[in-house]
Length: 141
Image (cartoon, rainbow, N blue to C red; front, side):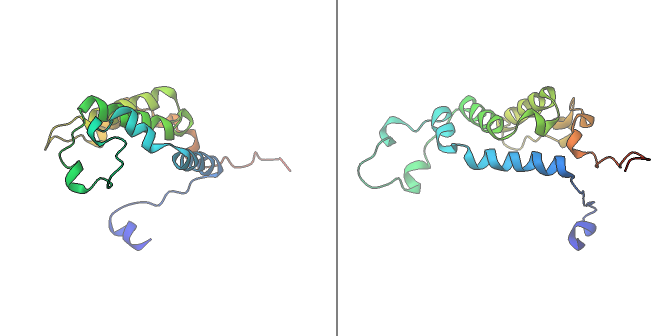
């Protein structure tokens, strides 16, 4: 906890709902076929596919290029494969953040995107799993 306090971060405890949601995200990330997503959206040039000789070396791939649209589609597909609407509290929030993730990867060199821009239009109150567990009603056993 010392470093978090030094940076001004506050430790947040996640209740049982949050733990369940985060486990779901981790589980989907482990099961995700990352290679297929990349191949579908940013395929290797034909000369590099199904090589029977030596594997690709760094110098072989440094000249490769994927268009922005392909990279954007790749990021959006990967994001949707890992995160579901429950993780973002609503379909609207998920759509908004996915849209911004796609915009982020198409920014030019030295362009940036603030957290405020990413969160614009996202309703934090929809993230019900972030709420602390409700105390038991008074008078209940």
